[in-house]
Image (cartoon, rainbow, N blue to C red; front, side, top):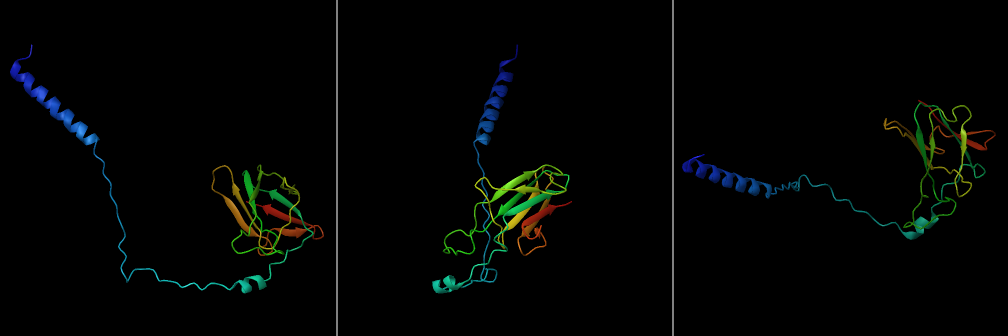
Length: 176
């Protein structure tokens, strides 16, 4: 059996140690760092003048590249599964107020590796036909986590998509 003088220091050590552990688990530290901005480092103040509403109304909308073309063929010539996203303008021939969005909701199509690599696959929307207009944006990216992407392709401004088959079909070729 242990002697009485040996038990008291052990009990005292256990109580002090337990109290210290309980105290340390209840502590919460937070550090806030605020940048100091002086007059010398402050960003410049820009004044924005409002545009008169009559200037907005007189602005001519961008014409469609070719209103007859509502066929888009996409070729995946890569070894990656890809997603092609279209961010299309609302009808640019009918201007919308500045507070309204200028783009439709984006749509996308997924392709397996080498899918449609020779002739391309004609894509469509569930809601029916669509038209490509100057300024519509197409972007492609790999779905396998390889962080590969292609584009952006801006209709009428970049070399792709190209107009083919007697100017009735757009072709977008995603190549490695």
